[in-house]
Length: 473
Image 1 (cartoon, rainbow, N blue to C red):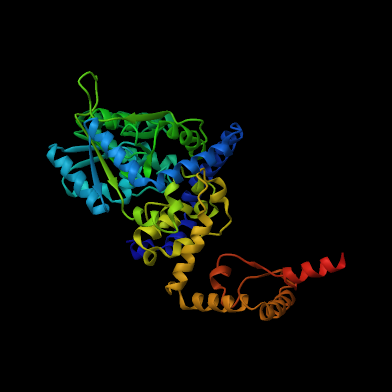
Image 2 (image 1 turned 135 degrees about the horizontal axis):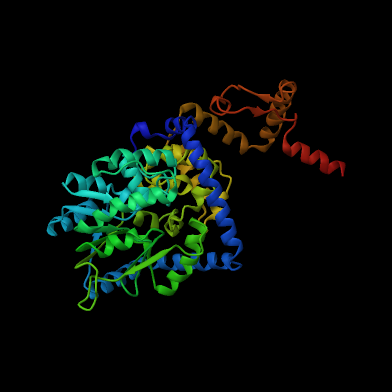
């Protein structure tokens, strides 16, 4: 559940007043959008790949039980173990049990959104395990005691100055002074500290961008290489992934990989694409002695059988966030949970419940950029509208909002009444607003005019103007 203090309107208001956050988001927005545009323009077959990827995922979801069972069989054949978790509690219990049986004291983690979803770090720490995030962004926010604000760039809300101050504070006990403000210096400092943790870790936990049914392999896509160190140096490697991550084969993987990095960061390919298959074999020079995969449902089966099935095509690239005007106005923490932006406004109500997250679908402007940019062609705006409808039908939101929408719906279904009333209203508002050209306050519209002016209409509705001009032609 999302605590009351995490409700979107309150958090969004705080975010809008945070000048440091605005600076960080403005810097990041230009890079994400510009880099994606260049990468897509350089690949003429990008749209064909989108269609191919959609077909692959739709086929897989239609046969999900088959491919999951095949994946489990291949993992077992390679010497690994698959564990099934119906929810977050089940996933936490299985991973803690694996760590205890391994006698673990220190755990290194690669970035995993499903790990955040099930609150894995908190559970491991309560079990007296030391947990070290090794992705640079995740490491930064772990030091800050925060949660990720972006699914690709977890610390996107932090400025370089804030990161330097964090490193100076937390690394003083290691005898390290303040690093410079350059990117290279900050990365070098994190690498110096994390190297010690990689070498002493007993268990390494990573997520998985994809699971390959034909080989029982797990795939992680990174730019830092921390995932490789987390899954090869410790004695035990644990992968945690949602059940929707499975793909039939490596050819399908190659198709979707051509979309992933271009959509996420504007690269042709990420620096590392690591395929892990089972524990270390006798002829291998390195690798874990144990290989475990924890497959998490946590509401995904319900999505699979319902009207939100297409959401399971999501490959967590972050393109919808990067092009969302609402996200770039308030940042990720305003959404109150793990998943943010348009995809989070759909996933969060489906996983934690609409009662606790009904503000999120209503925060969207429905401009459609998220669906336009999504490499998997997920119809996010239509899903957001469905969630709005559900919330209205269940009586969520203020009484004023519900009455207003009910009144509008009553009129909209009766054109003979709707046209003269709206025509009269536009005429009156046009006359009242003729001097200033905009309204700063309006009855029953305080939520809108508290943050912006409402331009005064010209004095007639669009339909009336269209009919008049058409008749004139």
